Length: 219
Image (cartoon, rainbow, N blue to C red; front, side, top):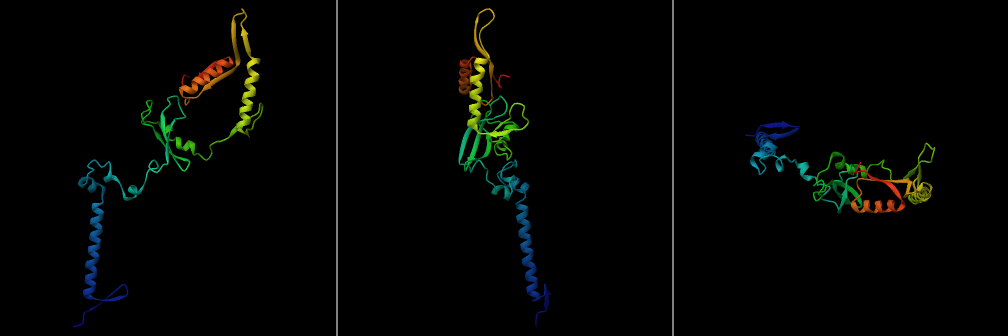
């Protein structure tokens, strides 16, 4: 006796083939549900090697495919945070000549790998699209900034130092006691200067006769 025909999605099938198809579909659905259940983070946490759910059990397939920027960096450069006077150490990760990540330096005796929110966001400061990367100068009485070359700015600073030192020089006081100082030059160092740089700055400005020599870390 001929098997009864069944129409499924516009295709003629025998009853047996139709039933086999249903069974096959049920198997696929069961496999899918089983796979989804076993992939549930709670199940992975209870059945795997991560009972606290802080590692592999909490990772998704997408998360496992990610790679940290620190792992693909070409070099790691030691640096110091440019913000406050604490001077936290930083590891600067560089790839293809560009800073890709900045993290705390665990070897730093100052911060021991820790960074505040501002220090942790230093990479955004380095790669900010609106970061000023050239010298700006506003003339006396002016309202606008104009761009000048770094060499020109250094020459202007040197000319002002040479002019200000003798102009404001004090050789002796009203009693004839020696002073040998200039009141027209002052120095304010930044927190990212190390001991060697501060030593050289102090030597330079003392030799010029300046007495107003300070550093942000002291203030």
